[in-house]
Length: 529
Image (cartoon, rainbow, N blue to C red; front, side, top):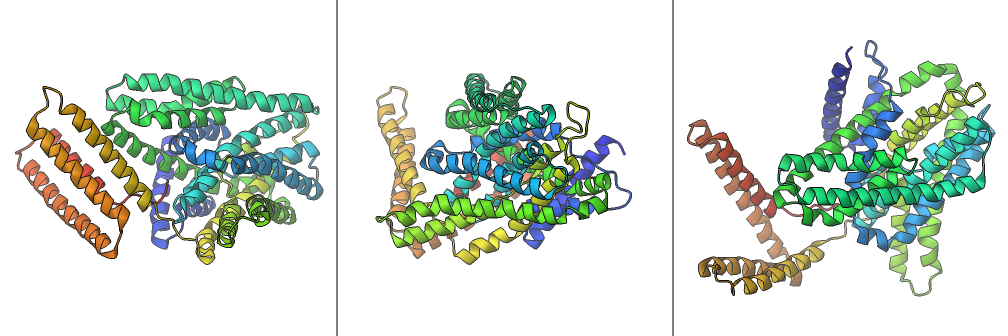
């Protein structure tokens, strides 16, 4: 089968499995992995092997960039201590624990190979963790903690992975060189990412064409990742740094229309990349078993169980210790805050999902070392990595929503924060109108209309801030329903005019876009970040 036919087949599988996941109310990443696993064993279908370079050079840069672009530096600074503990030290502790277990239970697993394996499964996977966690109805600070950790821990694990891989292949290792490499990789990656962010902010300020804006936005992650990777710095941190920098500049360097289009393209891109990646992960079990044999795979069952338990238990113990013990020992902390902290820590501990990045790293392990001998226990590394992915992504992913409900965690409302922000924005606009009124070109009638609109917005947001009563919420819901019905009628009339030839396609699209934007303004904000 031609490669293009396989590509379209995978796209069809992503669409069909996502639709089924929505119907059975299962998080789509979990369902895509399971669906891919089943598809891999259907007779007659071609085997699709996950290529590590495709993941690292095609999938990873835009995923990292877009997620960092949508992240908040303010939120990250508030939990900086936890980010360092979980994205650096937890990864190191997990690598060490997994290496000990693998070395003890897997025949032929040298210490260097065991550390390589530990670095493969040590970090959570941002594509898996964010795709599952961001769709759960949990407080924003939980999503922020999961997002921050999963964004930054790849840098730690991939540096250790490369160092251990050199030791395993060459048979030698220097701690001094290793620590120096760790620091230079991080510093170089961040520097390149910030430089690329600054350059692209200048480019986008001078672009008026919407299609070019979208294209440049998509290319930014690659523009940061590729140079850093080619210079042997951290491409992961480069893409993240570029995304965080441009995320702060987004409202300045692009127009409102451009931001809407880029946001839509970003959502589609992330969905398709995640969908392909999760299906490809599921498809890998058949080639893995065919490559090493069912008997050899069965002999690793005990090691697989032990490694999966190690990955899960180490994370839970670490997260509970670092998140809860400081509050437990504090005399000033309230009991309610301690209980809430304990529940949040449990959820973070249970969200240690691994995904396609781990499997890509396992498949990237070379077949042989410098002496010509086979890489120690390479087949076992690949199979055990897949077992960890199934145990965490499928096992923990399927139970995460029920786990959150059992703990009684509810969504914290952002209603007051949003209404206060709207109020301050409207007041800033009112001050600007006062300055504009002094200009000779300012039309009095137009100024009056603008003032009336702003005064209505200010009064409305004051009411929301001061008393969000059931009656007020009922009125807001009624307004949204009325607005939706009016917009539907207008859309039907626009289509009728187009069908009769009264307006051309460009006018139809323009009028419909205006209606769509108005409907978006009347909808409530999303509960996730």
